[in-house]
Image (cartoon, rainbow, N blue to C red):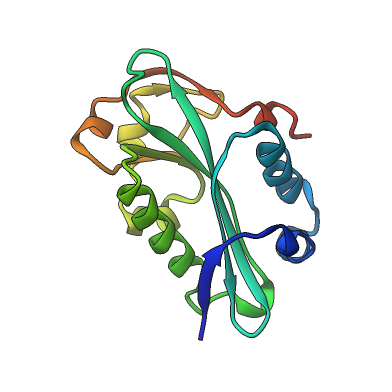
Amino acid sequence: MTRIRLEESIDWPAIYAIYDAAFAQTAEADLVRNMDRDGDLILSLVAYDGKPAGHIAYSHLALHETPSVKACVLAPLAVSPSFQHQGVGTALVRESLQRLTDDGFDLVVVLGEPSYYGRFGFDPKLAQNLKTPYDGPYLQALALSDDGRRAHGPVAYARAFAELT
């Protein structure tokens, strides 16, 4: 049975292993580490099913024209290949969105596959109201509150995104 909990410092080797196995690189794990270093990481969850199975992270997103909207970015998300297609990613997304809602977040933005994220309510049309470095059909947004629906204009991602190679 998959158990989801907040990431702890002891999890870093497992997080790197998850991203390396899922993407054959550690750039995504470096992104998480750099967001943590910069104080931009707001939620980091690890899924365990006897061993580390997946990880999800969220960072701050600044909305310049609607600064009262509390927004964040979902990135990255990874599931070890041996645990894929078993609901681990779904469990991570659902648990994390509930935690963000409980913490008063209004909006979540993600760059990803619309057919995957659409089932959680992410919508490319809502994201079209934002001006990001990642504009296009894979940019999606999910309003967690009525305030989230009024978000618009240019945004600023955590500094670590600019450091991605």
